[in-house]
Amino acid sequence: MCLASNLVKEAAAHADSAAAADKALREIDHEKTTFTRREIESQRHDLVIIEDRVYDADRFQWAHPGGSLFVAMFGGRDGTLAFQSYHMRNFPHEKLRPYLRGRLAPGETITRFDQDHLELSKKLGGAAPYFAPRHQQYKAAFIWVLAFALEAYALTVKRSWALATVLGFLYAMIGLNIQHDANHGAMFKDGLKNMAWGLSQQWIGGSQVMWLQEHVVLHHMHTGDVHMDPDAQMAPAMRGYSGSMYLPWMVLQHYYFLLLELGYWVVPNIGHFFEVLAWSHKFEYPLSRLAMPCWRTQSTLLHLLYYVRHIILPSLVAIRAATPDEVFSAVGRELAVSLWMSTVGGFYLAFFFFLSHNFDGVHFTEGANAGGDCLYEADSGFLKQQAASSSNVGGEKLCVLNGGLNYQIEHHLFPRIAHSHYPHISKKVRPFVTAKGGQYIHFDTVWDNLSSVHKYLKRFSDPLFNPVVKGPARPTPEEMGG
Image (tube, rainbow, N blue to C red; front, side, top):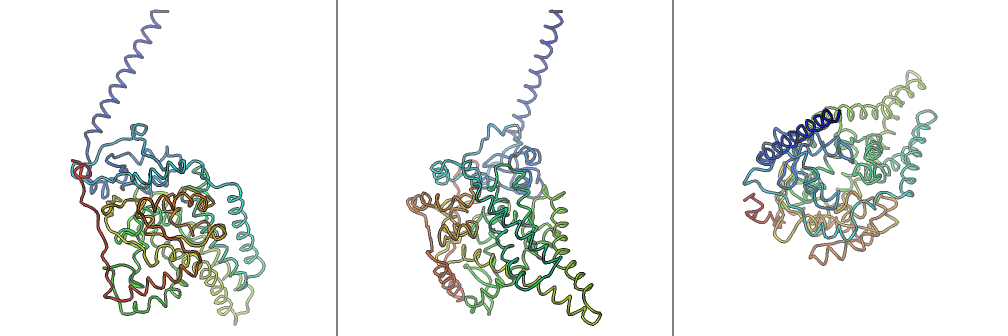
């Protein structure tokens, strides 16, 4: 019995040793395997780049505590800066070694962690203590329940212009106070809860997956980059940086920009629907194919449900209640009421979004590429560029109303920190950024911010106004993989 037991143990030991040797061999092979950025971007959306290493995004997405969608959105891209801004620490390469699939090929640029940002992250104590407190979660639940109840009342009892105005405002509040924190992973520690609450973006007529592409993958990682930040691409409506298209009507852009914001609802309510079908934001920035199989279907179906709630059902109710001679006018009124609701909500969102990154003194740069890698100009980096391309306005009261979006600097530096904490951490962020030589602009009032926006747009309404947009510093041999 003992001999048999020993033989079994010895065989098991040999098997473990062989498995360990095989694993070590695979790891050695992975260390020697190299990929170019172009290869990953165009052919390998199952992979993600972190610094100079390449990992298996397809496998890791199911182990990611924050949920699979976030990882899938970065398939085929560089996720270095995303990890840093969301986790506020260095990447655990040794812990994630089982997912390692290779390294960047020699000569490829390497996106490095920003040491200034890591230093500030340590001062704040990391992301873990900063999920939404109970009172913020209760506020979010109240807004959503109230919006749901009023919409149900409108469909079953009576729709009106006043009720549409209130619903439009509540939809904006959902966008600012619920989906925004949830889709950034800041509402709850549980990734599944964040994804569920993040679907409120679909409830108000947008697309969760397209929102993540626009805000998380592009805008947050490359804020102020004239090529990779979609929010910087204002043409043909307006011009906001040197080299952007100039058209004759832009001479008046500092006067008509508020009118344009009345039509912002078209972007999430209609534009995102067709962008999801094309799987490309603005039909220019393709989404990762790793996220395509289920998320495109989900987003499309939920978008269709929004159209049913706000177009089909109100029209059917109107047709049923109207006489044959009144059908067209009754349906037209219902569609106009829905349009007004979308206009109110969209305008409120666009107004405050536009204030944040379009002010006199905003800093534009270039150095990001389609694969997500980013090089900064000399004496800059992630922390300084995020602060220089964003601005704050107002204080804690506006933060409660607008879900912290008036603290854009803090939000862009630490998107996984729930908005309730922004007024408090700003007391550490501001002196740190300025001590590092960075720009930190905080407007006391919305009027001050709006006046700065007017001044900024007026400057660029002149086609001869072309300040230099600085590019990245020359890569060092280390950054080039040498």
